[in-house]
Length: 273
Ligand code: NAD
Image 1 (cartoon, rainbow, N blue to C red):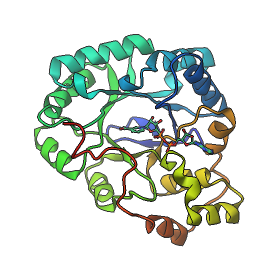
Image 2 (cartoon, rainbow, N blue to C red):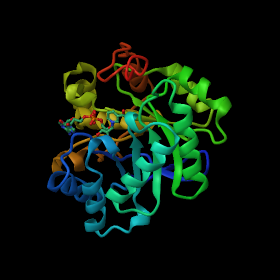
Image 3 (cartoon, protein in one colour):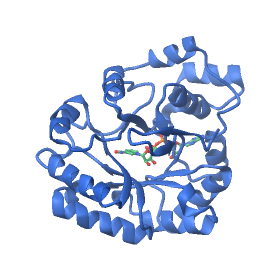
Image 4 (cartoon, rainbow, N blue to C red):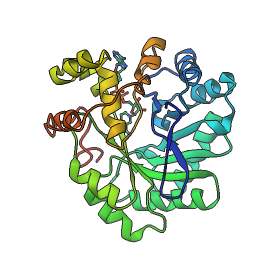
């Protein structure tokens, strides 16, 4: 169900369905979205320093009345803060805004060349100090992971990547599985383009579900943690109503086959410089 979890490599349980809040405005908009999500049963919120809404996320969690320890909160260190000392400072600032003592998951937002290993050392320190329950990366391709892993004391527990029917990256999925790195999807609804996919629309009609629900369901059946974004109450509720139907193996494969190796967001090898 919506509160269901999968274990990360260190045994910490991550709710496999969460709310993304990129481009949700700090203040009323994000506070309300977080409260609606928690009321609907979500137990996982994905924010980042660069989203500039950590304060509202923290406020929404407190106002929801859901006990802090039941909510899995992720934030991310932004590119310009990478490096050992600056990451530790950025973490403190995120925690000050969120008004939390312990974070559930802290990610390196992008693999900034020449910086991400020092940044990873800082995450390992925060993890050793008990300030964060799990640490991971985002937008790391296989070559970034191959470069990082030999120097890592602690392996990343999560890699959060662009993932939808146009960008499936089966090789990277397999590599992550092999190394105990949980694959997590960003832009799972193709930033709205999901509604242009005939195959997805056909499946939606077959099951009496929305196209968004078809993709959230595809993520979960593929073992991918997913964080669809909306600030609209009806969409927040419906995006998570995916536990009353099941896609067949053929249908999952059919969605996989829509892969165009096409990104909606930046290429981790080009951005950032
Ligand atoms: P998304 O694919 O989740 O799409 C969100 C958009 O789809 C919304 O703005 C809304 O317009 C539309 N939508 C949502 N539900 C709908 C529904 N039921 N019906 C119709 N339209 C609907 O896009 P996203 O926000 O880019 O990605 C999700 C989350 O992933 C972000 O909020 C953020 O938390 C995270 N993210 C992380 C990175 C990263 O670099 N790590 C990058 C982008 C996003």
